[in-house]
Length: 104
Image (cartoon, rainbow, N blue to C red; front, side, top):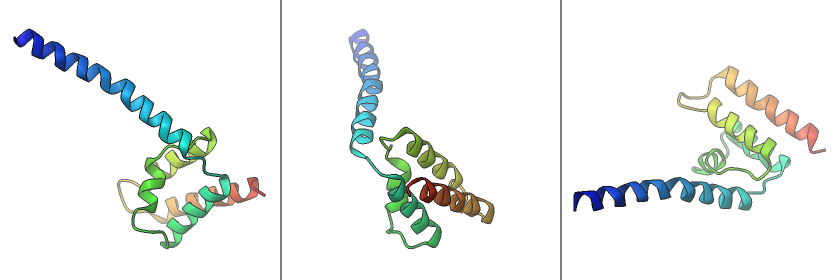
C-alpha cells in the first residue's frame, strides 16, 4: 500500500512540470503585447498611475515576443523585492525610451 501511495506521488509530481510548461506556453501565446504597450505599462508604473494589479500582471505573465519578455523579466528584477530606487527608476525610464524609439 505504501508503495502505491509513493508511486502516485511520484507520478503526480512528474506531471506538474509538463503542466506548468503547457500553461506558460498558453499564457505566452495569448499575451501578444507590442513594444508601445509595454512602454505604456512601464511608464504608468513609474508615474504610479497604473491599477492596483497592473504591474503584478505585467511582470507575472510571459509575453509572446521574446525580446519584450526579456524586458518584462528585467522589470520584475528591478522592482523587487525592495521598493523602487532612483537608480532603478532611471533604468526603467531608459527602457521606456528605447521601446518608444523602436516602435516609431
